[in-house]
Structure formats: C-alpha cells, structure tokens
Image 1 (cartoon, helix red, strand yellow):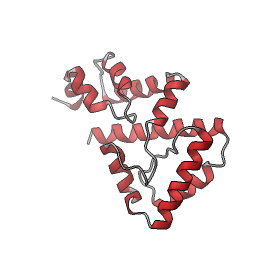
Image 2 (spheres, rainbow, N blue to C red):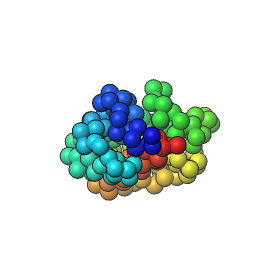
Image 3 (spheres, one colour):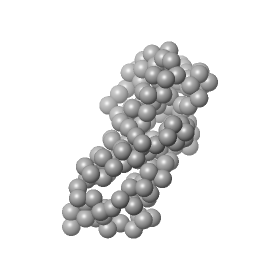
Image 4 (cartoon, one colour):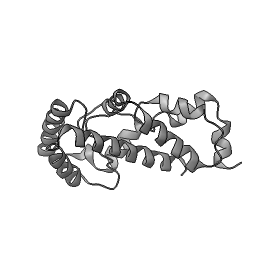
Amino acid sequence: MDLMDKFNKLSRSEFISTFGNIFEKTEWIAEKCYDSKPYSNFNELVSRMLEVYERAEKNKHLEILNSHPDLAVEKKLTDDSKNEQKNASLNECTNKEFIEFKKLNEEYKKKFGFPFIIAVKGKNKEEILNNFRQRITNNINSEFEEAKKQVKKIASLRLSEITK
C-alpha cells in the first residue's frame, strides 16, 4: 500500500491527528481536508490544505498566527515547534540573545497583535534575529502578509516531513 492509500484510509480522528498541527494548533483545516478525501496523490492533499488556508477569512488567519509560539522564550511548544526551534539552536541562546528575543517578541506583539513568525528551518539564530530586527520595522499590512507567507512555508515544510 502506498502512502496516499494509507492517508486516504485513515479514520477522521487519525487523519486529524496526523495533519492537525500542519498549521500550528489548527485542526479545522485538517477536518475540511478530510471531507475532501480521497486524494489521488500527496500533491493534491498539499494543494487542498494550502487552499483551505488561503481562502480563510482574516480573523481565521489571525487565530492561526496567534497560535504560534514566541521564538526562543516559549516554554509550552508543540513537538513540531520544539523540533523546529531546536534545529535552529533557539534552545541554546546566550543570555544576551535570550533577552533580545524576549524584548523583540514583546515589541512585535504589541505593534502587530500577533507573534513574530518565521520558518526557521535552515536558518541559524543570527539570521533569525536579523530577520526579526528588520521585520519589526514593517507596517501592519505588509507584516500580516509576510506572517501569512511564513505560516504557509512552515506548513509546507511540515507536510514534506510527513512523507519521510
């Protein structure tokens, strides 16, 4: 049985358990995608998930953005976020870096109303901090669009991990 057959045969709860955190703590996307089964291939499933996300209303996008953890300082992380942040060495910040992340997280949330989101895979702490310092100067509209783009990147990376 190939991977797509396996995914198509999952029960609703198994499907949601497998895909419910592709978009951080957002099971409703997986639920909608379950209702569209069967999929002929994995790319079709990925496209459907991204389409459901894209078509969501602004308040739903804000909910998704706000379900993401603060970088480097959050203690309660989903397994996905924990692994992603660990691979970027965000769990090994110096005291100075930790203080800067904490300050940037607070200022960013105060300015934009949601946490700073970046697909950290393949990036190191310095790249992430530089990105953070630059993006905090953006206006609300461009940063909202950038945060949505980053969520989509994270989702795509998480989906590619599922097939490994």
